[in-house]
Every structure is written in C-alpha cells, then in structure tokens.
Image 1 (cartoon, rainbow, N blue to C red):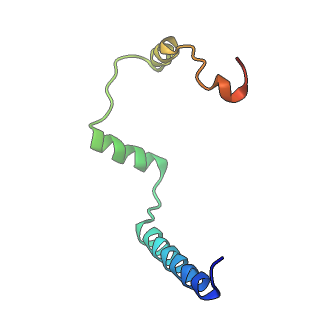
Image 2: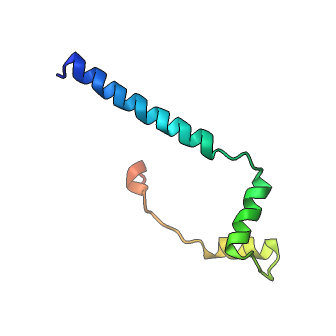
Length: 78
C-alpha cells in the first residue's frame, strides 16, 4: 500500500503528463480534409501510377488472397 503523500505525488506527475499531452495536441492539431491528407501523402511518395483499371486491381488483390487457419485457435474452430 502506498502512502497518501505518494499517491498525491503520483497524481501530480500524471497531471503534468496530461497537461503536456494536451499542449502538444493543441499545438499540433491540424484540421485538414481527407483529400488534403491524401494529396500530402502522394506528394511525399511521388504519386501512384498504375495502368490497371480499378476492377483489375481489385481482381488482383482477391486473386492473391490465401487461406489461413492462423487465429483459428483463438476462436476454437479447429
């Protein structure tokens, strides 16, 4: 069991951490649309070039999928 003084000291530390996190959030918060965020991402990555149609891309993704029993133990399906 901790003493009252130790509990107060720990709570003061937590309060300081919360204040620091709040300050960082206020200073760093950027309200930007999803379109702006996507544009910024693509500018950093150089864009996306693909000659395939969206339907072809989706077909490739589904075609590359594999069956797995990973996690089956978690749901008792084996």
